[in-house]
Image (tube, rainbow, N blue to C red):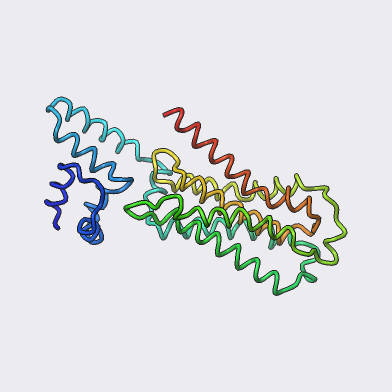
Length: 264
């Protein structure tokens, strides 16, 4: 299938990529743009071509207006290749970990079991990388909620499971006080990453995919920072001050998505 056949398929209303179309899109960047965002551009152009001339002019004028709006820092960021956006998001998390944990480590870090620490760091890093990957490396045909729902559920549940791990000898002497301070600390340190993820989003309106995967990554990043920073092993403190940050980010992203849709 070549570019001309792709055009004919769009004019016939065949916007769902078939195996032949996807094979062509793999090697043609121009046609790939037509099928991005659930073939939004391809549908618009196909609809405009079937309208009377005046209506078609209006439709193309709307497209030109939307293209003109794609300027500024956010437009530049969201247009970066997926690998670059992934790298920048990962570096923002690394910077937050360095500022929040490496420069201000927990006082009992020397007594923390090395095997447990290595396992947790590995799980947090893997979860963050998977969430960024599924959010930023979008295929032409987007997956359903089942494609990433398992990851979101696991990422949100992991910090709660960690909260029930046996505390170290030094950390078990702490009480529940200071939970809100830790919550605020983790949320603020992950705020720059949240801003980057918003800037990277290529949808006109926040998608469910972006909301869920962003919250998953941010919750894991905050838990990672606080695991290395906060010495408290009190169950109530860890549940409300550490583990709940992912759920809070999920609620905030969902609120922003709903407000954005209402405004549109």
